[in-house]
Length: 301
Image (cartoon, rainbow, N blue to C red; front, side, top):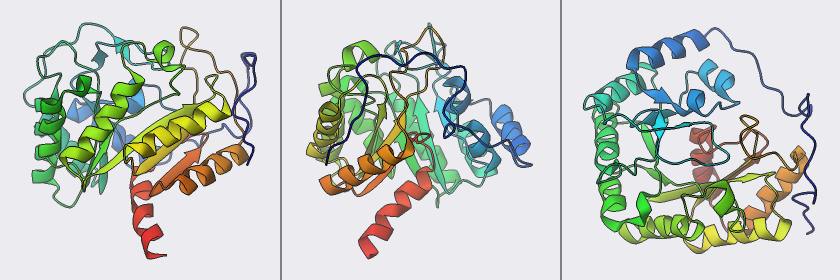
């Protein structure tokens, strides 16, 4: 199957996005989500990363929480989260987060975090406390943890695994050639080692990763990135269109039409991923409950 991922020259900056890159307006439930988020005092990646799905997700009373503050110690060329010296972790953030999850009646929550290279444990202990508090307050909720790489330190990855998230998610983001430019303080092979380490520590824990398209990758490079993720046992894959958050970030090389995402999904499924979500607006946390439930549907089919 021939799948073209990009054109060789950058696409011009467009005043109007392609027709398939339009989002719905908020509905009546949107203000409720905003009130809960504001009352909790916990940041969301929806806001800080300028996610295009904010209106849709908040209208369904879904939010992806971002713990350990809203300032990151790393600067990635695709991400809108502010890079600056962070404040110390807030001791009551796990409790406030658990309250928000309960107030929104979430059946599946994705909790992510800024990179905290300034902390001795890179925030792993705080992340584990957040998972534990959600478990206590909402025992039926599926908890998906989406941390930074913890420099693939076994003891830190193990700390979060010991807290018992249902899904350990760590995004690869892009292909190996582009990784040093797009995420210069991370490492492509180190991210693979994190995902492999989770499987060694907790063989039955679901692992998940996400990739973006449109940054300048070739078809074969992208296929290789998917193969690399499968080689370390990743169960769930998400693939979405990169959208430039500002003129100070990496430009979009190409907007892929929806049919090409269908081809990517078919290719990934053939590789053996248990669940695949691919589409222009797919993000690692977008419709996470449905992506997770697709595993069960596939196995019962």
